[in-house]
Amino acid sequence: RDHIKLMKNLKRLLRSEGTIVFSNNKRHFKMDEESLAELGLKAQNISSQTLPLDFARNKQIHNCWLVTHA
Image 1 (cartoon, rainbow, N blue to C red):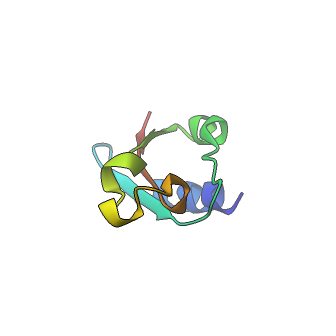
Image 2 (cartoon, rainbow, N blue to C red; image 1 turned 120 degrees about the horizontal axis):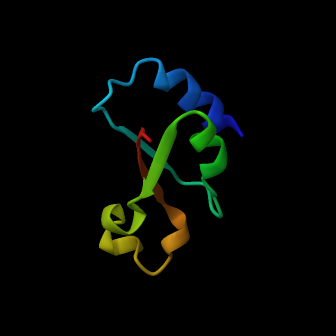
Image 3 (spheres, rainbow, N blue to C red; image 1 turned 90 degrees about the vertical axis):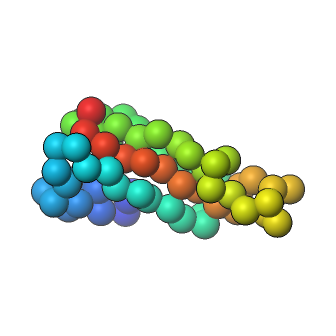
């Protein structure tokens, strides 16, 4: 799970009120929310809010998350 290693490293730089915007185009991506919680982080999926209309017919082409301190 490369994204958890990345989040662990980013957490050191994240201010208490800060937000990480994490986006990828991996089909069938699943955020490891359990591992995030172990790091003291939480994620909110905002993919549907950031998906361009041109790609709306294929919702699995884009993933976007807001990651903050839990």
